[in-house]
Length: 267
Ligand SMILES: [Zn+2]
Ligand SMILES: [Zn+2]
Image (cartoon, rainbow, N blue to C red; front, side, top):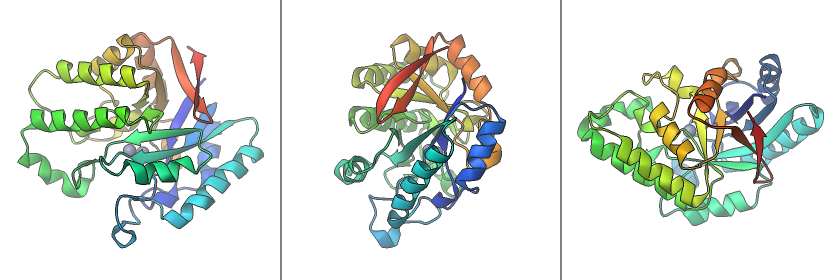
């Protein structure tokens, strides 16, 4: 059993590969259940300000859904799920919910990629880390992430310590922040994603850090996994390592989703 619930395709403007190519790659790498999770259109911005290299356009959403549904029928032997990666933008929940509620999704991945207007995971704006006290920045990031969990909009919270992407790490002990996140995630009933893209960036570490994942496990937060592939070559990458980590911290099962309902696979 190998799950990859975080696949992007060319539609988002910064990934390459067709859905067919992703499915072929998944088959070759023994993925048993895969989920497309392309970026939601930038609903929080007026149409003229939406960057076509960050997310698909609103008019592409229908095609995206149709293509996944078509491929599900064409590949009945594989579990192909329809997901969407949705940015959490405090104050814009209604606009996101309007889009999400109209789609036949299997799951919604909630992500924090912005603090205010700063896209902190975008290499173009990496200098901005220098303007911050890193511990305060991490606090702000984890507070926003807790807001995402509490919003009730998401089934899964993606890459839950993405703020470490470029390896800017505070000296301070992060355990108190991790504990708060674990408590809020458990209380709000969200699942956490173990995301292997962290291995491919300067942080050189799976999202989340082992210490954080242990606490999430201890507090009873369910777990699922994804490669965050932006190219068919990246499908399934690092997932065996992710599965080892998941078992090592004490998980006995992983979550999958259908029609936004959670099901568990025993490990
Ligand atoms: Zn993301
Ligand atoms: Zn992603």
